[in-house]
Image 1 (cartoon, rainbow, N blue to C red):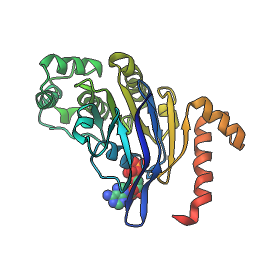
Image 2: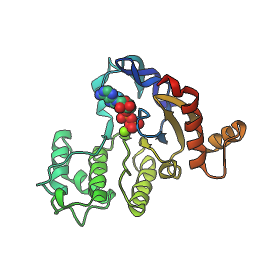
Image 3: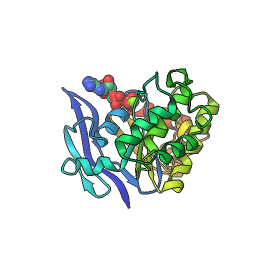
Amino acid sequence: MNIIETNNLTKSYGDFQAVSEMNLHIKKGTVYGFLGPNGAGKSTAMKMLLGLTRPTSGSFTINGKKYPENRIAILKNIGSFIEGPAFYGNLTGEENLEIVQNILGLPHTSVLEALEMVGLTKTKKQLAKKYSLGMKQRLGLASALIGKPSILILDEPTNGLDPVGIHEIRSLIRSLPEKFDCTVLVSSHLLSEIELMADDIGILNQGRLLFEGTLDELEMKAVEMGYPTDNLEDTFLAIVDADNKKRGSLR
Ligand SMILES: Nc1ncnc2c1ncn2[C@@H]1O[C@H](COP(=O)(O)OP(=O)(O)O)[C@@H](O)[C@H]1O
Ligand SMILES: [Mg+2]
């Protein structure tokens, strides 16, 4: 069953289509990797799913509920992390989460659980402004998952992290469907950052979905199309490159 489905979802800014007739199929209980180079339209698509920006045309359904009629019901079930989450630097990590806890009407144990899940228990009394980038990303993740939402939308959560930090976040994300039965939509501009955690991937370029399926299916497509397959990052880049060449003059 698809927990998120989009139907020709489109966002235009003037003549420019940031997201173009996109049809995503995200299965319940999976990690879906949303992959595309900078400017491909990942954040714009995610913002539409979160009701942060209005589609120009097309529609989507989340948890069987259609946007925009059920906007509030849809948002109740989603935790998110979009483009560098904002915090109060003069509050501690724990205090920042307490704000989210109070908004969502959760018990204080949820704050401690969320801190534990992202590995910030020991540093929960430090001011957020003293946190390293990796710790800030983890605090952002903690505030996204504190309410145990059925869907998590994470926009480039590994951006700017070192390999150890990437590995930690990746293991955490991978464990979430099992931990509380959630579905994760996670974006990245690097295949290597999501290939080990995603069940399915969608490859986006210039606002269009070029591929959707498993990594095995991507490899099969690459063989079929004569793209390199010894390294999937190269496969991804070759697909994007071919698409750019095909449409180069259009945009
Ligand atoms: N508010 C906006 N007004 C005009 N263009 C925008 C706006 N937001 C995004 N864009 C453009 O839409 C394209 C897709 O952006 P974005 O969704 O942020 O891509 P990604 O997250 O994949 O890097 C980019 O070319 C970007 O410049
Ligand atoms: Mg983005």
